[in-house]
Figure 1 (tube, helix red, strand yellow):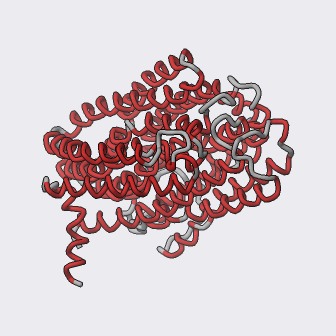
Figure 2: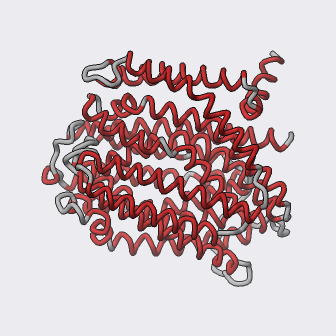
Figure 3: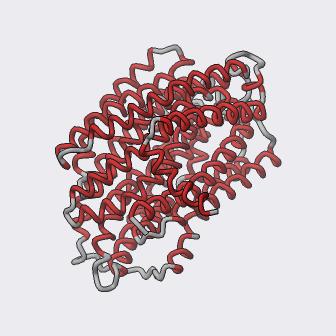
Length: 539
């Protein structure tokens, strides 16, 4: 099997798992919205603060560090006589000790952490703290999931890391249904902070944590399937962990920067809590935004990342350059369509969470503001992973510092906006800062690799942008015809109408887009379609 075939198969398998997981994630978000509301709900904003804390703290401690360092280091260690097993046990033991200590400390500091993020809104702070006691133990299991999964990825067992979140979503969904049955659903978010009792808090936040526990622990079974056995090993000297630590240092600094930006974002958007789109709306809009990124970009880039690391280890920079160009062109040919569709169906998509034009438009405008930057965000992801494959975590620190400065300034300026537009302004600040970061990152990567096949990438992107113009116009016409911009319209009045409208608009736009690209003889599209057409021709 050729390298492109292996990449294609791995990407498809990863994408399929991500699609199932994301669909369940959306279902979970819809049920959560039905349980505690989204726009104008102080309960939803308090839960969003608390449930976001463990992921934030984990990322500071180890998340991005492990992603940046683990795969390249394991690929290098795999040349050892034992296939890297001893190194893996040492690294896993060290990481679990650090993450375990961080989990205990963070849980003890739950009130402080909640205040750091939600201090701008004292009304929701007590409830956010109560949720945080239950949510913060997730930190350890996020770390365990990432560690076990990245080792599997480095061993070219890509599926489990992508598929086990399905279990997380199923467990969390069951918890939300139980919460709704026991305590009642509140889609308009009228339940106040004072209406919550300890049992309600335990069921909602505890089930969220149980889902994270499940997705982590089950990966041990997949380890056994590929012949790995974890045995704690505290002999950390003499195995090259110092080099990994130096790489991790820059990534740790980068994560501190992004955490600072996250604090700025949360404090600013919480000024609108109870009065319009706020933190829960930002979280739901980001969930929508991340769907195409996770399904397409992460799937393709993860499959390329291991190969990039292997080529970089061999010093074959020309092959790294080819990998980068192929990954970017493969990502953008689909992400251009995804961004256009998201912007057109933003109101119906928002109505799936909270029907009615008023709330759907408040959330939909945030989705549009994020979607404008989708293509650039996904390209940046590939650029960043290319630096990691090259063993360079120092350069990403500096272009992330640039992004944080731009974003923080723009987000703080949003305080001057009318309260109903603060969340939209913050989302646009994210898009602006991410675009500026991409430009700088590409300049720095070009210095590292020499030529980046910039002409080839630019021509591909221009072809994609040209091909999406007609489908975008048709999509807007369909949206208006289906009542997606009018009160009481079919596309925004209830969930079924919203889903049907999205399906119609998405299918029509995709058909026209891919048809135009096929007529333009897009090599990227034909590269994706060739294996499928070959299989069909054999039947």
